[in-house]
Image 1 (tube, one colour):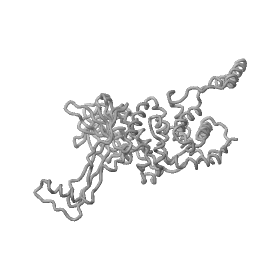
Image 2: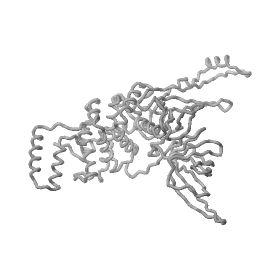
Image 3: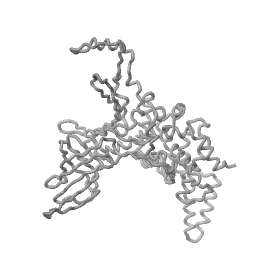
Image 4: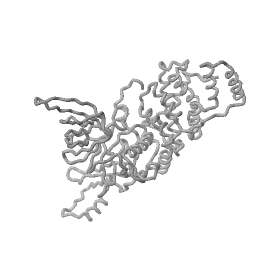
Length: 506
């Protein structure tokens, strides 16, 4: 709600470190410095005795750390510069720079070269999105299995089997799903690791990787762009923004393909609340079930990404408001309404038919105003009459809502279009100062309901067009760890409050 304090996490979720190294700025000699990797607090600290570092930023700089690791720093921005004089009159310049990306590995990367074949990453809540509960498990009555292991075990030591043998396992199915998309070949898989075992026990840990393999090598910026487009889709399905884990890319090298680790210092982040984070998204609340309904997940992902470039502006705006989660203010409902105006012509009507009497009134009014002397008022009215018949924001919002209403039972979202019209009126109040009998500030819970309705309709309509079965999602019920599950549960209560503030028209 408005006024609550959010805890923000940004960038890739990496272990922080600081290392010394030498960095090449194109001078006769490298510059000595210290590189700190710490998400949005990352920095390159330099001591430049020759005072050669000038300018506010660098597109990219390469360096070699003291342990031999090669790093490429992309989009370096100068944060602070200072100069000191020694007793001998020698000037020392100290420079601190912020790198947006830090790439580390066996080679440097030229970000302007088309040589990236693959990018992969993990998600903060990847195990909830890809809830493969049968991939790992344990067997309490493991004697038959232990007998087989003991009989085939190649060791100088004999395995003694006790009364209560137990077995832990990974079923060996590494691939979760794979499909071709407009961005490249998307694949999702398990990456299990385990200890050798001993007197302190044994454990199996899993890390789920999402990977894009490109049909042709691309530049660094394009690889990041495609990652972001895929991430926007996955975040909607999960229900909240995601921190990125183990972000890597693979590039072609003359001797062999090389993998580089990427630290995205100010990248995708998460604004949320402690009680939401501690609970985490429940697998049953996630919009698509990639394990039990993989065909639907693949179809929706492919269709969503196929249309993503055309709908990029609208979806970027949606992603920004959806990331706010439980924080609402006046600007959010403005953005939530405007994203419908950003949809391309293929998604919304460009015009609406006029009834005969309205069309006749339009012709009469235009003729009357044309005969008036030139004035701001005359020209404004002629302009408004010229737009009569063009699809308005209300038309576009209601058109997208029909995609939902045509799928669900009539009792699921009663009076949804009425609520949407009121949401546009609220937006117009904050944008144009349109007069309203409603005191939105005193009834801000109404603004929250109207905003949530716009956001639900936008995202749900996009998913339904891509092949999402909304009724299967509704039938599951919800523990309200996804905003859309919360909206489903609370819609009728919100509608009752809406009608208390805005009585139904007679």
